[in-house]
Image 1 (spheres, rainbow, N blue to C red):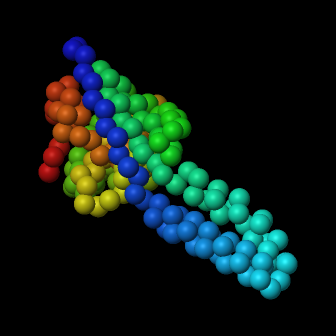
Image 2: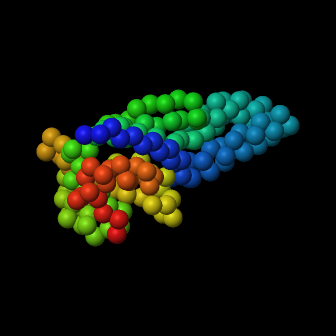
Image 3: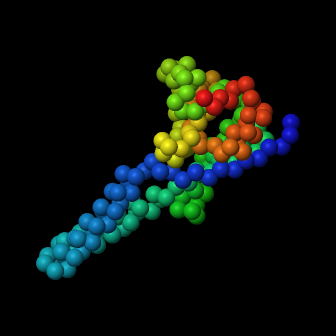
Length: 167
């Protein structure tokens, strides 16, 4: 088998509500500090306590998923704040059962299985091309949602053409 390689980096856009919460907490903290400095010392103390709380909510909000396809192995990692990289999981493409767009009817048979475990490593943006990869390993089915590049799709299609669908 020939050596194949593809790398994709996808920005996670799913946590919009968490980002809004962090901004609201920072505004609340600023208001408490201002009100406490002008009128009541208790609000100033509460504002001081809220400083680390509000900034810790924004600390790991920027995430990117990195897909690395080398030969018959798909590695998925998360990059937080463009500085910390952590490997999340690894899949062998020999265990791939089906790969199709998320809303494809070819996945209906797998979605009816109550033991299907879904893991979402996509941006969450419905305008992007999100694919579902169904893996069967150790008697367990997993659906992995990814956003592959055209190069990554071609590499997977080269070795597993009969189970890759683009409809």
